[in-house]
Image 1 (cartoon, rainbow, N blue to C red):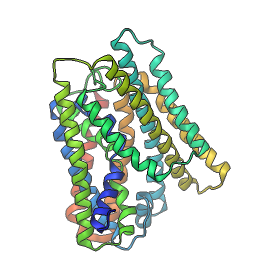
Image 2 (spheres, rainbow, N blue to C red):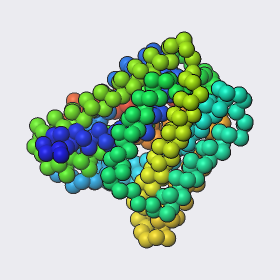
Image 3 (tube, rainbow, N blue to C red):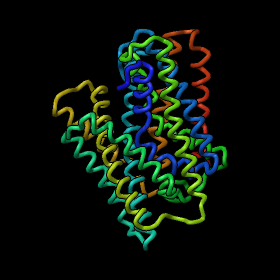
Length: 373
């Protein structure tokens, strides 16, 4: 049992950040940045820790436990809150499409190594993952907290197994890597931005810190310890995938490919279920509607968004493009959180808020280069 407030907060931060990104991002970031991937993971953790620290200072001004959008809204107004919620709804939906296509790419790659994979296999697998996740969310299947706690170590073990086998491979032109990117700098910037899909959860401090009710020292120590725990998992994952991708043996044997793909398919479907349900709750905050009928309509909105984004899955680099949507949503939310902190606290946060806004904007700049070719 975690008795000390700092360790409880650290565990909460780690659980908020770590998730399906452990499975998806090693391949995606390596496909974009190659050997530079561990450096980008380190930069992401540093930026994420700065975001968490700034939002921690915001919550310690007397805010009750609340999501990031509500924390922003308490300072900047209801419109700002809705903007963050809408951004996260769209981002969550695109993120589930990206997860579904990642699982599909793994299955297609496993089958293709033993022969030619049929063209329909990827779309069918991706649609199946999203459909199962949507139906489970619609039925509101119970998820005991103990089961969700067990999922995280299982995902961690699976992530390290996939990284050790460099599976699935991020071949240029596949769903996991664009056919071309205009320059190494743009590729690194896109990889750093996409990493915010793996970092959605740094904002969990707006709910965790008020609940912990610890002093400033214990709170800051908890956030720092949580960020260190994230780094202790993400950086070895990035290094391990890069080392495995550089081995001359090629792809893993058939039994390993199929085992890893089946495990990825199962775990990612579970994440699509819980994330679609979470996105439905965000829609409920936006609309202010409650009740079983409203809940179903909210989930239908999320399901339609997921389906719309999933139609892009056959394009080269589709997983990267889809991941950019939740990454940009998180970045927008963090920028608004930084502005709210500056407005709420004033000069005390000037040393952190505006440099962080500039850094986040700089990370987003490679999208402009990519779109302009």
